[in-house]
Length: 89
Image (cartoon, rainbow, N blue to C red; front, side, top):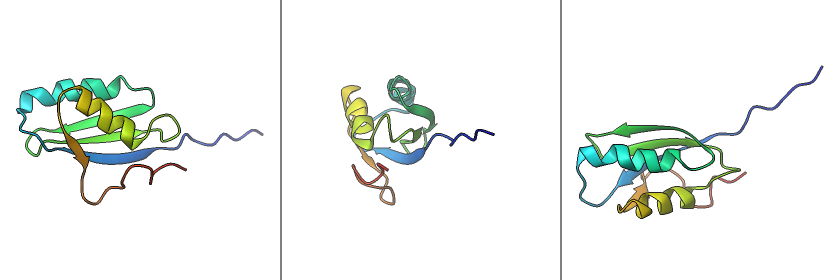
């Protein structure tokens, strides 16, 4: 009998630090979803936060931050989330 190991997942909460409007968050979310390895995103329009579930073997936190920056926004991990490089297996 063959057993398969489920894919690894990591989750991070990103906080948009620049002024933004709630209607901008779906565009940021769409940019993140285009990354290979991003499995799910959840936008919190009232807080300016985005939860991202991703495969740390395919994409890392730095990739997520650069992608949001490429969309024109500054972001940081929420204070209780790992810093870049901490989530790789």
